[in-house]
Length: 233
Image (cartoon, rainbow, N blue to C red; front, side, top):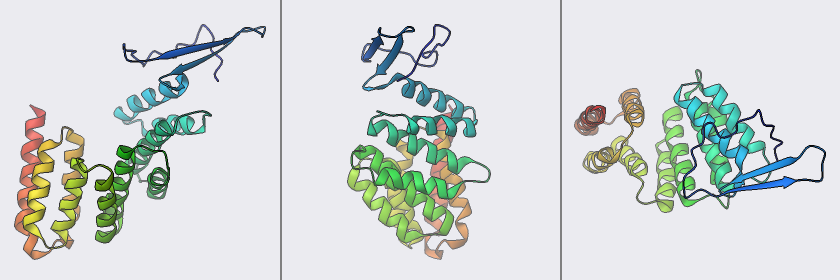
């Protein structure tokens, strides 16, 4: 529950639609009225923090965004799905810090994996992010395969997970399958930042690439660059 004064504007960063449900509870038994706001089955202040954190992250104010996602996790009565979203977002932000806080990132993704009530999409994202992180930090192909397989079990349509499976094939010396998986997934991506992350990872791992995968490696990079240009226009 949050005490709101008439000087606090909680919804400056939230745009309500016809699909939103806003509930207001007022305790009239106190000298100063206490008001509780719930938006779509969650405390309204949690929705405010989530919205503001995303805006801060877009402005690269990652530490401030992390603080707000942490506040969401400290709140009582926040639904599991919203907690899982805060953990996934905070984990991503930990990984973007300079230097990255890798152990914190791993801990947040692991927490979502272990949540019994997180959504299938959230569990898929957490498994996928965890596997990719272990590959990025430790060249751990086995963990990338294990976590990607689990991610696809929760969401077989995820283009991110299908791309990651293509990475497993690429770095395991199965170039034909890798090219097919990665190329189709790249064409479904709508975010330039994801394309840039994929390019950076590939370039950083060229040293462990099997000789037989080099042609597919170059073709995947070409596909990423081509699609990036398309997204820019």
